[in-house]
Structures are given as C-alpha cells and as structure tokens.
Length: 430
Image (tube, rainbow, N blue to C red):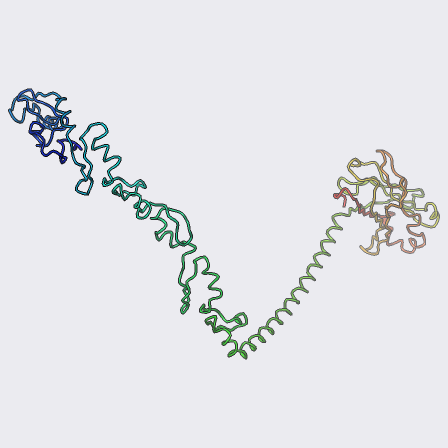
C-alpha cells in the first residue's frame, strides 16, 4: 500500500527489487514512477511534487539540473506486478499477491478477505478489530451492541443498559430492604408493598389515633399490645368521652343551623310574597253622594302584568242589595295580554283600610280558580271588561255604621287591592 507520499514499504516475495525501481529521494520502491529528463533516474511522483513545493525553481536532487520529468508507464507496470506478502504476514496471514494487479492486489485482499486486517466496528463504537474477531466483538464486547437488561428485559445499547442511569431506575432490579435486620432483596417495583408487610419495618402503634405514641418494629406490635393493654383501654375510653362531647356539640350546632335555615326560609318566603304580590291603593271619594256603583281606574297587577278594575256598590248588589257593600273585580284589556297566560288564575285581596291606624282592616280574598266562570277570567279586547267576580256581601251596612269613624274620613273610603297571580308557563308572573 502507498503512503500519502513516498514509495512502497512492502515485503517482497522474491527479495529486494532491482535498484532501478528505487526512488532516489525516499529510497523505497517507486510509487507512480517518474523519470527525470536530465539524468534519467526514477523518483516517486509524490516525492517530486513535495520537492517542488519546497522551492520556487526545483532542481534534480542527483544532478542539480533544472527539474523536468515524465510518467514512466512501463516501469510502473513492472513494479505493480511484483509479488508481495500481506502487510499482516507477521500476524500470520500467508497471502501473496501483487501491488496493484486486478484481482490480486493488496488493497482488494485487505478490504475483503484478510482475517488479520483491522476494520472499524460496524456499531460505530470507535474501536478497530481484526476481521476474524469482529463478530465476537459485535455480540460480546462492543459497548454499542444491542442487549436485553438481565432484570427487566428492556432492549437497548449495552453502554446504556449497564449504566447507572438505567440501573438506578430499573423496576426489576433486586434491592436490599432498607429496614434494619431484614435481609430480603426485593424487586424495586415491589419495595413499597414489601414495606407494608416487612416485620422489621418501624411502624406507629395501632392505637396511635387514640394517643399511644409508641413506635416499634412490626413484629413487636403484638407484644406491645399485650404489655400496654390497660394503657390502650384508658386511651380508648378518653377518646370515646371526647367523641361523645364532640357529638353533643355537633348536634347542638346542627340544631342551631337547622333553626337558622328555617328562619332564612321564612324570610325568603316573606320576600317572595313581597315580590310576587302587587298592591294598588284606590280612593273612593264623595261617598255620601254616590248611591250607584263606583268603578276604579284601571291598574296593572305588576309591571307587564294583567290589567284590572275594582267595582264598589255602596248600596249593595244582588244578594247584598240594601244590606251590604258589594265589591267585585273585572279584567280589562291590557297592553301585555299577548304574552300572559289565560285564563287568569290567582288571588285578589280587597281591603277596606282602617284610616285611624294600620291594622284591623276589613278584607276578603277573591279566588280565581278552575271553578271560576270563564266569562270572569278570560281575556277581553281593549276597551272592554270581563264579567265581575267578587262578593255581593263584602261588608254589612250595620258593621260599617258602627265602625264608620275607622273607615270613613273626609267622606272618602280607601281600598287596597293586592294581586298574586299564578301561572304554570309564565314564571315571571309569580
């Protein structure tokens, strides 16, 4: 084989080659021989090129004439046909061939068949190994060979599988139990469960929840229980007393909370009543001059609600004529009737107000139910009103006359009408 520059350093089968093959610069058999034109000696091409690099005007190293040379093809053919020994002959290779003849060249031998030749590891571990031992290296020695972990069977490169980074995490690596006195080796994945049953594990007394602070090996628990049974009994008794006191306190707190909730429910109900009940105060003036019926102005039960009117008959109507005040409610055609539920259902409370103090008002409730006649609760057109629904005998004349100073003032009566509508499909009416 040729070096980067200079001649061949092979061991020749037939002894030293003729001197005319020798390069006068490197003193080796010429590689790619060149003949100078001055003295006709032979040199390696690379040796002459190196010489030309060292000076501006190179001269023949033998005759010192201006250097000029040409390729000696005939000589090159003779040299490359010389028989040589393998460069690994000292290691035992018996191959003989030529320097560069097709099929018998040293390069072909070394690159394909010489079992003593050093070749790079195909796993790219960086080592060079004899071709004869490459397979053994790949399977047994290469740090980059693929192996299975002997514990968890994970597949990977030998260098990784045998490294601490894997072994420190390998779930199936046997680990010595850390509890003093336990000689078992447990798979890493089973360490936690082993510690839950290991007789050498340090554990708290099973009565620790009631106050026993003793810690011991698990195997000593039974003995400790026997020796400390009276202590455990006393601690358990004290815990029961404390628990009973806490239960009583909890019962009291629960009772108070229940009362608070009930109170809040009542307040919520009161607020709901305020929110869902609409009130209207109506003045009936010049009572002494009114013998016929009086119809109030129209009013709405709530914003966006039903429109109604109160009818009062001072001298009575129907069964109450001449003996009672009669009061009725009529439904009027309103602005929001299109979005309301019909027929109207609910309660209308009519109160004759006590003008001396805010109590003891006279009241009756007009109920609109399924039993109420349709003509009293159905929708009517604008400008019209439904049939009256209420009380012929709202208040007797006798009772009113004896309590006249309560209800009548400045020849006027005041009525308060409170409406609570109910609906199955229009929740905003509630």
